[in-house]
Amino acid sequence: MTVATAARAVGKGPRRRGRQRGVRRGDQFAGWAFVSPAVVLIAVFGLVPVVWSLLLSVQQTDLTSAGTWSGGANYTKMVHDPVFWQAARQTLLYCVLFVPITMVLAVPIAVLLNQKVRGMTFYRMAVFAPLVTSTVATGVIFSWLYNPQIGLINAGLDKLGLPQQGFFQSTGEALPAVVGMTVWGWLGFAVIIYLSALQNVPRELMEAAALDGAGRVRAFFKVELPLLAPASSFLLVWLTINALQLFDEVYVTTKGGPLHASTVLVYYLYQQAFVNFDGGYAAAIGVALFVVILIVTVVQLWLGRRTSHYEAG
Image 1 (cartoon, one colour):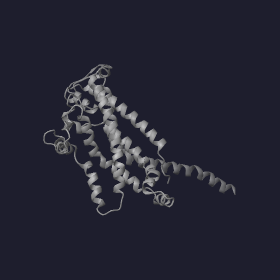
Image 2: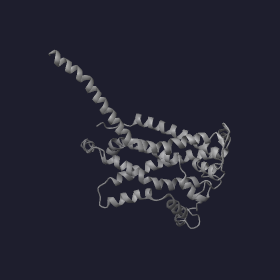
Image 3: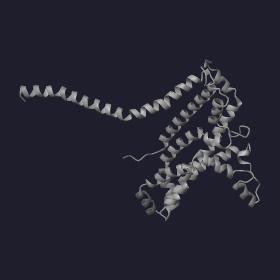
Image 4: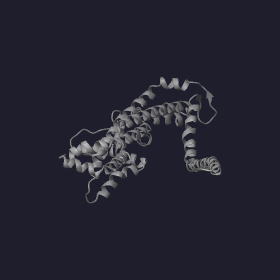
């Protein structure tokens, strides 16, 4: 290499690195330009309400006038509020019933909908239809079905010679009745998730299981069911978050009654904020619920990553 060639090579190095840095800056700018609308929306409708709730939770305010600083008084009130703890227990009970029931029912239905039979599109639409039905319509339908006097379910029980039930009007049955209604509403979503997972199971694995002499049931439990773990992990997180935020169905049907028997945390928060106009206390309940949802989500995601095995590539 001559002296001149070496000098040109040395000169090109810094210029090339400069061009590469310029390209990287351009890519970064383009990336931020694409995601900036989503970032703005998340900041405005996600982070700002959280910060605003934290500020409200240390104030006494009726949401219509300037609040006054109260320190931790709202949190102290929450700790000594028996209705809050009743709502917390009922929210936990609702999650324990709603999430497992929905997931367990969804698996066999997804397996049935994964068969190749005539009219399967109609069956799939029928299962998914409750999810696109509005909460108000769902509440009206189940208010009629659960009606102790003219309800269809009690009419069926009467034909079978079984005792009549109070459902939404019974302190012992109101929350289970809400669970039944919401399972009906969310079952289609869980079925679609499991159906998508089943359709992604490699055919070679099922053929290998058949060659090894495994029947259809054994192949399902040994091959398909383990591969549904990622879908189950996703549903566990998604359904739990939705269960902890239950509000619409309770508002439309029971209004938290009778005697707070179906009051859940979000509905109790609504009552404090917009019925009793105690905005600071409602914000404290919201902050507590936010912390619970954050902890539950992190734990579930951590467990899901330890128990789920994803296929690479």
